[in-house]
Length: 182
Image (cartoon, rainbow, N blue to C red; front, top):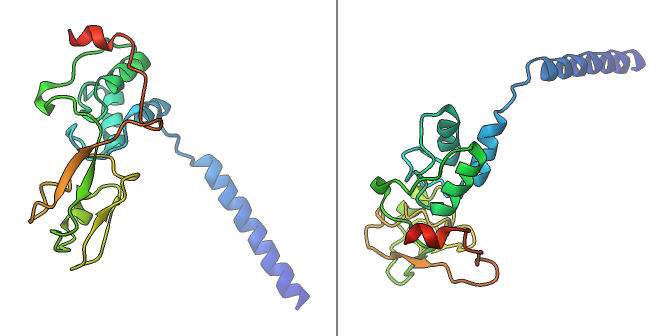
């Protein structure tokens, strides 16, 4: 019995050493610039920028394939933060994307909801809960306001409501924001 335990311990030690060596030798470093850019984006995963989420958009910015003014949910604040990080001049939000919108969350009129689950499938952050043929609801604290659930609803029971301004959501206006609008 003791020799069997010793053999298993030796195999475990050798395997552990090999895995440790492989982890160090074949480590893949992430691009720290992409991580910094991604941290400035609002993490709505909405795809309004033309990329399937915030990470692919950050990677495209870092490669120079995308401009810094394509994040509609982030708006002017995000554009300025990206410009500061990358040493570029800020520019207005790309007009193709529409205008900058105030933060909003989805609200489901539960009396009209038929439980089709189309909104659950469209939500990139799993902020909608419910079951098939049962009413659904939105977890407001998780909703990013991407609006992807609104067009897929067959009974139009989802609407976007502005996020109420309170101590948790209020922000100082970005310096120079008032001059930029005039």
